[in-house]
Length: 592
Image 1 (cartoon, rainbow, N blue to C red):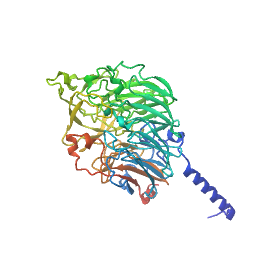
Image 2: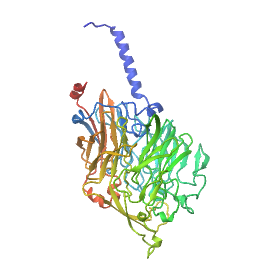
Image 3: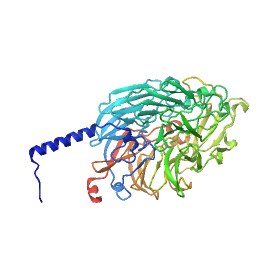
Image 4: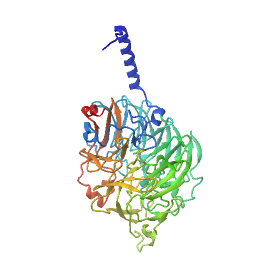
């Protein structure tokens, strides 16, 4: 073999250049281009949803139906302490470092090569915070040299990615009024976009944009009709034009419509997509009308906060069927025409396909087995109510204290709740984590008091089937057909990821990380993590190897609100661990 000598000086120079190049790449901050291209790049995960469209699809294929059998854990990182509870975070990956949140508004930076902690940040939370549905956090945003996340006392915090030290901190809303933040923010055009939680406390939902580097607010857009929006500190129009059009009296002042799940973004149409929660109070007889913009999807201009279109999935919501579930952008062919669509699987049990350019309804169909509150959808996607299944008016009862109880399906925790679905560009299918349950629900009198629960309803959730509650479904958005399903004894409460390796990954409360064949639904892999999985898996490539990570730690809304369902999962152990997997080196050699 012929070799060429470059000499000691040349070797030293080339080594220096390589070292400088490596150092600059390691220290490179996350750019807007990195975020927009996140789904197509495989060496990092720098956006919530593995791409701002929220498809949760990876082009990586080394881990596939044949090789996944050898997927092996390489390290587990414990969040430690007594602060366990629900762990719903999606990890982020950049330059060999994982950034992940944990319960009680904590953030960790972890060395991927070793699983060692690099730094930890614990938010100093007040004792009287009021999150409705566990002390969870769903993840961070990355931008430049910052790690940005929301806290349970409704603040945005930006940390230095290398040290974990606070760079800026901003109050988004007053936690004493019932506000909190549980969603991962997203970054679009250098702006941090966040929503707020607190729909059970009579708050007013809003979407806000902050300058990512300084934390200064750019725009504010309330999501309840009648409230003023702002752009660069100046009034920018009342949401819906004026107050009182679809709300009676002053109920719009405490109307709910919380934006608690965060949003997605599609650069093709340059719109943010945010969902809004239930109107307040739950007792619908107190607020006749559609109650805009509650239980809706909104298309929002990322530069100004202007609402360009809305689609309301449950007008005059009387069952707590929040419309917050993610709206996922995808394209499909209708003959020779490409349709710019977006899909959402709603709490109310219907799957909707919309035109993401203008919000027009394309089609909708049930994705759960039992729906009682509506007989179907009309040609514009509006529900055809079944009035026999709306909880009764307390004013019509003999004592005026409790309205007629009904059995409504789905239960208020939804045909699908927060847990994100995934879309495969290879199969054209959505993979939807869903649940089959129903509820006894009745209305009660109530009045608004700042910081207090504002429901006016009572409920008990019940399983519909003895054998299972959770169902992972593969759904064709063009035909409405369920292609395959996997039934799970406990409710599914974790997110889904799919890959070009023909796999669908998710976890269950029983603690298993599971992989399914994307076309057939055959389970091809499972690994017990020791606690229930209510987080969302991610995958990336590092040093030529494909990694997969998921957060394990049982909790969330089910054990708190689940009624009869909660009894089924009462013996599940809490936890708090990031599990990271890859294929063994021997296998990597074999598949080359």
